[in-house]
Length: 267
Image 1 (spheres, rainbow, N blue to C red):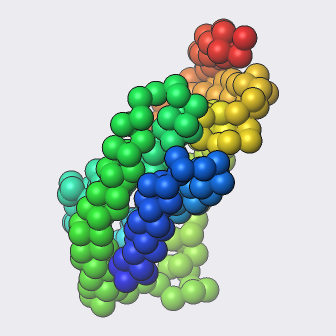
Image 2: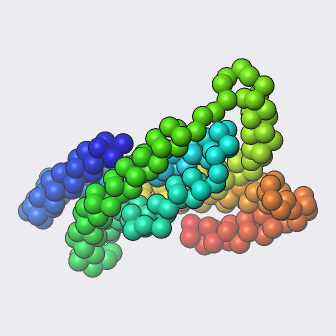
Image 3: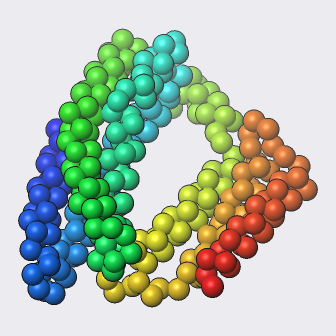
């Protein structure tokens, strides 16, 4: 995985480098500016997508380690060792390197319309490139150490075979301890709501042809999904579930405040 991730980072850096060259000539004629905006969009999306790889990798391997530890009877030190990657510099860079390309794309649109000072866009592009380079240097070694830990765990411990009473017992335990389905749905709804809001911000400030896209459809969808998500989250929290009345009163209050803010922004 570390090799694949490095290859993706190299591709993103090459696209960013080409985008910079198109930006140097973007002010010479309209066609050059249009091409730069299009290439910049591709570069920003690629930068964000590449940085989603380590998130998915460490999340998936974390679930695997926890499941293998439980199934094999290994002690919890293995899970603790896996979580050590969260204390490193690469963990912070995962967030920074993912956010900077999006910020660079948005500021590019804002600079082109004269809404922000021109230095913001090249500054964020430079930071995006430095963030990708920093990710290149720090995250792959974390992946290699994580892979070695998983190999060591698999070599020193074993799990029950399929279709045996031991495996059936493990499956039953896992089903009992699984997060409630509606609690998982609540997280999905809140995540989807914030993504709708982010999508509007991108269309409004980061694109050429969709700057007049209305806010209210996105805002109202955001309010609806956020309210439902907050209510379900509180009601079906596996550790401290709220009563139906408390959960939905809280969700309604948050939804009402958010709705006022949305209506204000949409007018």
